[in-house]
Length: 154
Image (cartoon, helix red, strand yellow):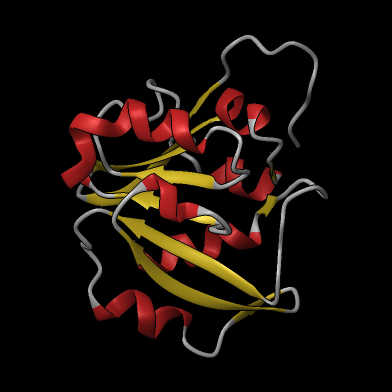
């Protein structure tokens, strides 16, 4: 799943207004299921001209500047609260918590035929100003398209 987080960054377009510095932080909120695998995956990698960095955070208040926030299953009881606090951050929200995309998360890992797949919620991404590429949508196992009020994803 750590490789997925890195790869998601390649297929998402962030709004021009998103605060970006020289790094591209992939943050893990809650208990870290990846351990050193995430650090090894992003070590020496870049997206655009930004160096990928893995960060562990204890609360959504620490998510400022995160481009991708993985919300651990340890936060399952607080998912709605966490998503609300990240709504205007411009961060891509990802989790393996059941029902995550139905509850407003953007990408949810699911197990199908003993393989890790993912579902996407286009409406949640649109609200945050993110655009998912068609390559990302092609490999999603499910795409939730709640009625949108104008914007389009490609």
